[in-house]
Length: 89
Image 1 (cartoon, rainbow, N blue to C red):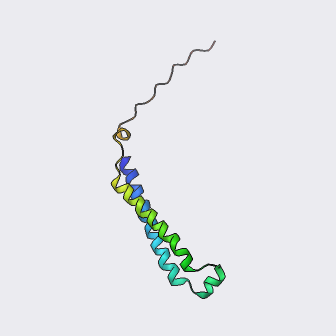
Image 2 (cartoon, rainbow, N blue to C red; image 1 turned 45 degrees about the vertical axis):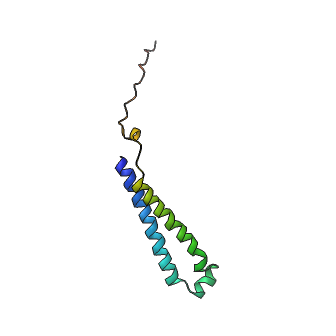
Image 3 (cartoon, one colour; image 1 turned 90 degrees about the vertical axis):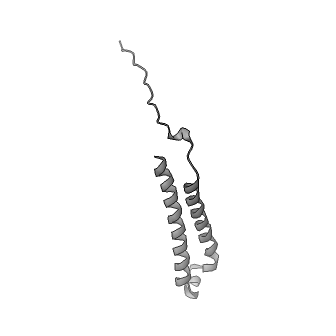
């Protein structure tokens, strides 16, 4: 379970970084003056958004890689006892 949590955090972070990088490349390759006039914003205005998303992805991947889960989370959980029901009259 702990390995699954760590690997999913790493995978999500790497995916977010890759998507931000691909979108940055695509934005610079596809945006020209006509697209900027139609959309109302330029590629330079969107660039900081993709830097932030890439930074969040990097932090998430590093968090999943370096942070260890507490030992108390790794202990098996004992099943709860259910109270005995009283017979109804």
